[in-house]
Length: 113
Image (cartoon, rainbow, N blue to C red; front, side):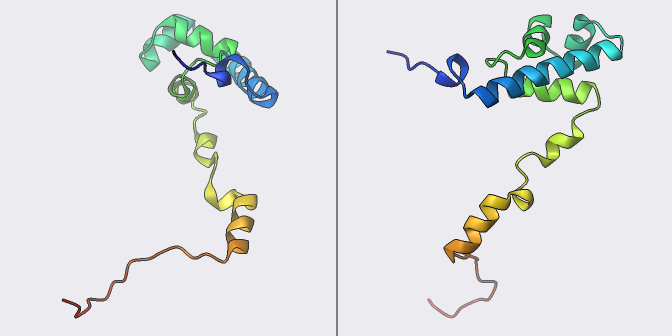
């Protein structure tokens, strides 16, 4: 029996809306550049169906397709800041409250044989 992927069939509302918005924005970017679906598909090395699916905001479309489209339109830069640990306020707060420090390897040689 194959497990059903609930993320593609019943995702959290916010996730679904964000992907649909991204798809619409990618379509707008393509049209502003006066590019066809076939031209963009050729540039990123995929078929036209993948571009169409991404522009529709299909949840089953791989993140690589979305990232490649952002690259094709020279919009990939902001993706470098997604989930940046230095900007994760909640994570940083939780880390500081835990009192746990990261394990570090010693740079000194020991005489323990």
